[in-house]
Image (cartoon, rainbow, N blue to C red):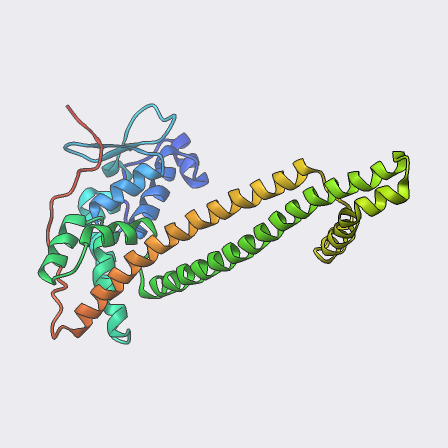
Length: 305
């Protein structure tokens, strides 16, 4: 790798070979950012994400956290000049050309995801308008937020969302059934306690036989409720507070699951629109997939005064 560097001091030379100098660390960060970027702005953003402060002026420079002074890129060697960084990024773009063996759907998705990976929302919206696509901004935001940058991930995401909706439906059905059961148990327990009190009061009755005959309906209902509760899995009568708390927890879980399902259904609706757009494009004889230049918000940098 060409460097074009001037001679180093003994200390800097030792740090360089150990990889502990600011310059050595910067080279690693720059190389990593270049390898994972396809344009200059994305490269600068990756450097910022790596913790470096960016300064652009006559010469590009970076400063790491706790580093006192900025390091000029040109001081890293000719391989790291701004011109060569741009050349290396251009080579990256040439490497992401659509493979010929991919399906038409996958090739089309690469055309779409290219806008997302470069953050070119305005260009995507313009392209979508030319191709009569629906809700371009919504599509762009969804693909970007969910990091859906290739067709396989997109198809898997659609499948996962569908499966999550089905799972939510099953969970709601289960909770609803359990909630219904708990409310029946609550009602039976309340009635059972009343009957039980009537039976226990028999102990203090002056004429137990007459008392029992008078309250025969409560005795029969007591036995019937006891059997029904046993059939529902209740062998020990829980307190009213415990049953009510259980019902409230189930109602809360039910409401949360319904909200989750509604969010998933919104995702499904967006995915349906994206897939409808795919269908429109796949049915078209030609697809206008050229990337269109668009103004973008600049990366926040410090410039030389």
